[in-house]
Image (cartoon, rainbow over all chains, first blue to last red):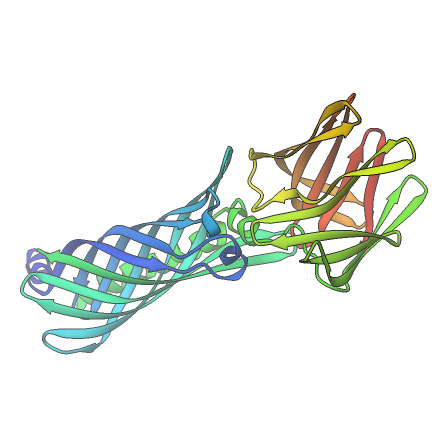
Length: 167
Length: 212
């Protein structure tokens, strides 16, 4: 058991860092909002080419033509990533996972709060150097909601960059 | 090594179960669905049939035209034309108000007034105000047309055309102040992708029977 723990410590690592990015509204949402800035935090656990990531992102979509409308999403996600193309200093990884978004819409005196589950598909370019881990890539967030006429999907593509410290 | 891999696979399986559980059982409030829906779709060829008591009202989008040098959409309501300007953030309707005076009528309002301020968000309140002065010989009368709208709760609405979820209830109060003051109140329920499904004006109820 001790050997397993020592081995795990040697070949795996925990990293913690932050992220910034931009997310784009699609479907009907882009009628009312512009692209969103994204900020967040993430922590990952790596084992060889595998990585698990727990992340938090805050997306804020401002209203179009200066209307006082805002759509905010507070998003938690759990992802599995596989660095399928690996070089000593860099690599390319693909990942998938699920998350949950806490949604807030505000417009003048109006306010709505909601929540929705989502799936994420991620493709990243990663650079490892010393204790730093830098990545940039595309995150496709697809939210699922049940409506009277079947499921409604809302898609937000997101470009984001992450910087992390590897322990 | 082998057991470590097994552990990792077990973690992955656990995540798989978590992902499935989130997607299957993760409840939603359809907030994003409402945020992306069009609650007042005016596309050429669309039509709605309403019932007010025993009377039938046919509403049909005729297409684009121009009024006051602005592009607008003509909508026929029982063959009487109404004109709307739509943009992502608002819907305006042509208002024509006349007042009688000796020898004929005066048009005091001929403008596109705000009807829906979009997107609809529960609890929002907006108004559209128009002020002018009417001159009758030596007399001057201030004229004000005020429309106040409260975006009320989200609720399902059952009408002959079916059950519509995620409908916004809009309470309209229209006041015209001149030498006297007149007020009109009505309530509309708007469904996503459909438009008005129910309208209550005093004791008159207008309900959607079918739409295309």
